[in-house]
Length: 269
Image (cartoon, rainbow, N blue to C red; front, side, top):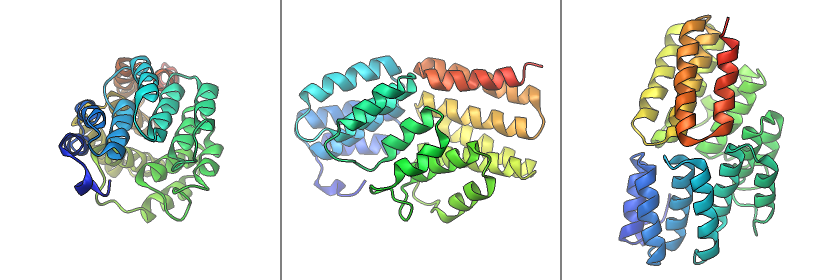
């Protein structure tokens, strides 16, 4: 986030909490900043991201987003994006798309890509990213990770690998770093490099574990499960998928739960 020097104390505290992976606390501080009209634009952005990434259960975060959309001062596009992603997490993909359709401007398109990814429409993620700030020539870390995941889901390993290699690895926050490590682990497992794959997969779990993001922790465990499964260790994959499911249940992330259940079914034999 740029321009932080112009933000006030509550918003600055929220941004620092966000950088430290304390998304729930960051959202709380950002809401105080927003109410005080303290760096309002940054405050809304941090608050919206904190509701998606933080530990608050998806149904509660959806309700909070809707309440805030009625009262937030100034532009609220980031909150609308957050609401769409949360609706998609709960499996309400059409409602999520309708929410984005009501946005006055296209935003950075990451939310639209996230909705399609959560809907399992892997081939729609790339097109969703085009046309905004996240065009193919300038992907943000979140956009790059989403596109790499969609390529991986389509078994386009070389393209996913090339996309990650072309992306900068410095200055990543805890959440996108854990995400990037998990994706890279699955690519390495598909290439038959077990030691490096497991090192990165466990690094993703450890990095996500240093945050309060239950959804992020679930995703890291899910990547670990996929890595073990690709390496032929069904028992370890099942254990990791069980941990992923537990994290997703705490977030009430229904799509995540369903994807963990798919892995559990695949390892039931």
